[in-house]
Length: 84
Image (cartoon, rainbow, N blue to C red; front, side, top):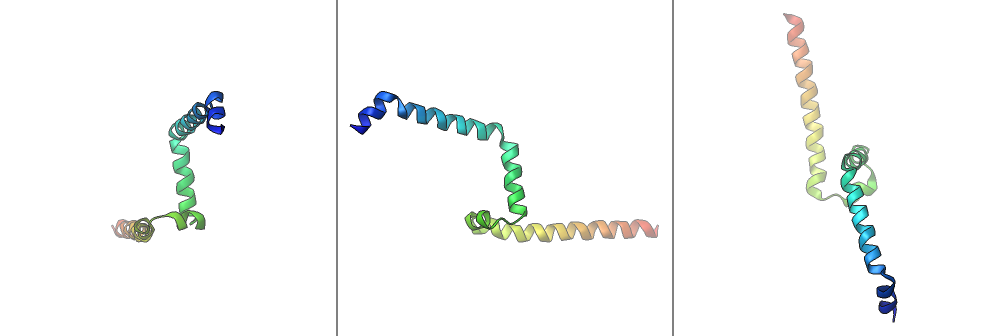
């Protein structure tokens, strides 16, 4: 009986339309959601970190090393430029 009532009321179609609208909204605001996710990742949100796959967690360390190497490169470039 429940199935017949939901079907008659168009509940399934309503749910599908709502789901489509949510999907479209996420796609439309992809840059916003990407920024939100990146901020949470940079702040090491424990809820986000608990859901991340291990291979992405290891990537976090690589980014830190990469950032340190970039800083070293900038410092060395400034040091070489100041000697000339």
